[in-house]
Image (tube, rainbow, N blue to C red; front, side, top):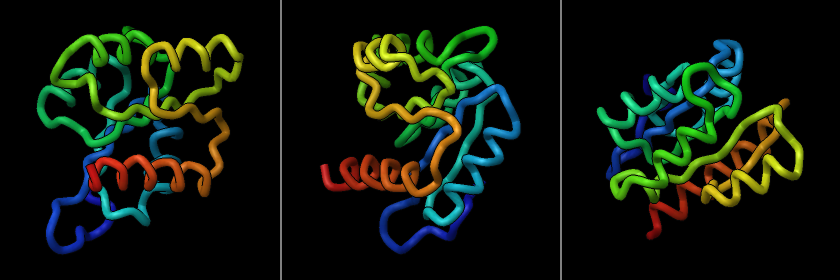
Length: 136
């Protein structure tokens, strides 16, 4: 789903939203609609792996608590594979304990936001990560 018309030149970045709650996906899509980005979604880690195999995203927004495969398990799999190791991941989760943030850091997570997510904070962090990848 393309939420905004891409600018000229580079194709729009692909952002994968991974969350098992449809309302959370809808909210994140609404927050990101002002970006020139293509948005893909997955309802758990297993679906996310299939989506990533089809098209490598430029950024993943990842929930932690999901059925079949948690966000931490997915992140560990992505970091273990050469093809996906460098994909930036922003955890977007209700888990706000220091141990959860530390675990995310140990997995090489790019950023960590707790729910409810502030739209402006999310957009600043997403734009920053996408800009860094564009300028690399």
